[in-house]
Image (cartoon, rainbow, N blue to C red; front, side):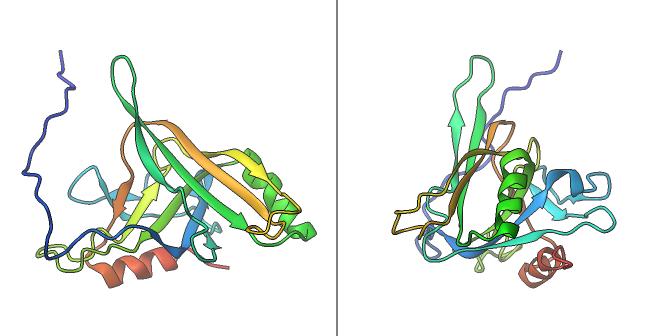
Length: 197
C-alpha cells in the first residue's frame, strides 16, 4: 500500500539578500480550462513547475488588465480536511466597463471554469540555477477556478460602477504551479504567445 504522507525535503532559510516582495503585477492571463490541451502541455523538472502550456487549435488566452491593487486578495490558503488537506486559491479582479460586450463576458465568467497565470512582483532573478522561476504562477490547473461572486455596485467609488469578480478553486490538490521554461525571457514569450487575438 502506498504511503501518501508528505515530507519536508530542504532547509527553510530567510533570504536576506533577495528578500521576498509581496503583490502582483497589473496584468494576468485568463484561459478557459476547456481550451487547454493538457496532453501536449508539460511539466518541468518537478510536479510544481509547468514548462509548456499548449492551447487547442484556434483557442486563445485573454489578458486581465488592472489598475493599482485591483488584484488585492489574490492568493492561496490551506483548507483543513480530515484525511488530506487541500488548497483554496482566490483570484479577484475588476472589469472597468459595462457595455453589452462586457455583459456577455460577465455571463461567461459567471458560469465557466478557468485557469489563471499571474505575475508576481517577486521574480527571484538572483537564483543561481533557474533565475526568475518565481515570476509566474498558474492557478486552477488541476480543477479550475469558478466564479464565487460577481457584483456591479453603481455607487462604489473604487470600482466606478464596474464589475467586481472573485474566482476560486476550492479543494485544490496542490499549491499554485510555477511556470518556467528555460529562462525568464523565454517563459514570458511563451505566456504572451498564448494571446492570439
